[in-house]
Length: 576
Image 1 (cartoon, rainbow, N blue to C red):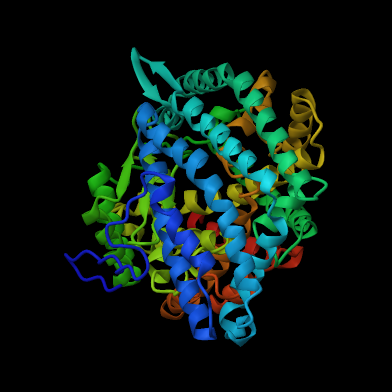
Image 2: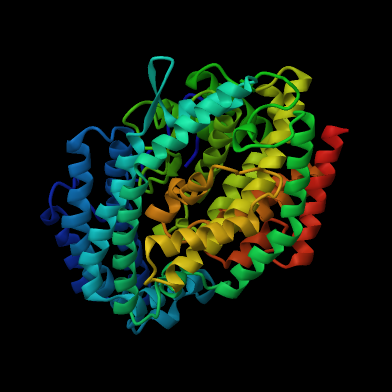
């Protein structure tokens, strides 16, 4: 796909599906699955053609689901959009699953399989073989039920608002109040936010109990002792184990947490406080007003294009193409699902970015983060198979988190005042450290949840607080806010909607720091390596992709400390 200024990319011409194919009912696509299943394959070349045809069908189906999900999250109050998504989940996906399993068998049992290029297909084929091992007919309705239950989280949290000075505002908008220089205002806003979340704590706990039971049954059906072990295989974690995750937790606790606590201690001193409270964590300690890197969504888009262009002109063209297609929904509004995402659309090759921006520095970083995912999608669009483009999260998040740090060298586009630019960079590096600590906290909690699947909500709260105390800063005073701590995990979307998809952020954050360190030494070389790694999609192992980016896939204490020391040194340069 070539992108030129002012031009939109063209969708690939279909070779297998009719050009005007639409998915209104199962009968619209079932003939394609049947044809693939019944086709006689007479050579290795014919097998590859069959694989390409299957990939085209999968791209079409994936994109159809994508649009249903995008439209639903953009407006959770429109029941027809929810019903459209639920129709796919309950009526289409359950019918696809058996065909996918049979097509996997057809591929693996083909007499021509050994004639395919082993280097080209080894990563893809190991995933197909694992999928065959995991498939259970009885799990199909459970997956549909799980997906429907998961969507209740967005509906519950998307409806959360508070009333501030007579106006109803979203939780994202309310978070801006925590940056106020007026401490009493911060405290009042904080308490309104946590009180509102507490109102739905019981409902969210009940929802999670339902999900926990369903997920454990899926694991049992597939022959696993618990959902954690099942998910490690289902997510294709071929390149590391649960023990590696435990090593990651410990490395973060020993190497990152002490730096985090030193930053909190400095915050307490700079604010002149006897006690550092949770509502003191977002305010600028230098008395500056909250950073305002852009005026509105249009300004955010324009500045992002300019910033990306400074790194590589192609990066800027990608965001420009998305803007021209109106594939950017950035503003926060009532009824919109919380969070942010970049949704790959494999047929057209242009992804969709969704977020809830309210004008903050964090929103700017979210745009750059999701923009990194988008660039990744553009760079992999011309890979032959859809599965080649579907990268594991450890790689996908490397693309996005690296973009946050690489783009930081050009943030003067967002901040024309040196003091603001300096402040923004300090906030970003502090966020890198806090992200690593929070990721370790959430991931360790998820291991406990699924290793102890028979727990009660009370046991879950007890375990959460124990882990939170282990990774939480001892500088922050939580006196009188114990119930708030109990509910903190409920705001983590991933636990509800994409279980175990979280430690990847931590692994990728370490990788992003390493890429940024390379960039500080040789900008052009680092960007070339970053681009080369992303272009691989998922045609090599995670370690090989990281190596292509010029970095290591390593969670050892020595390596984590090395990267932590680098970030700490860069912070000292900014605060000197």
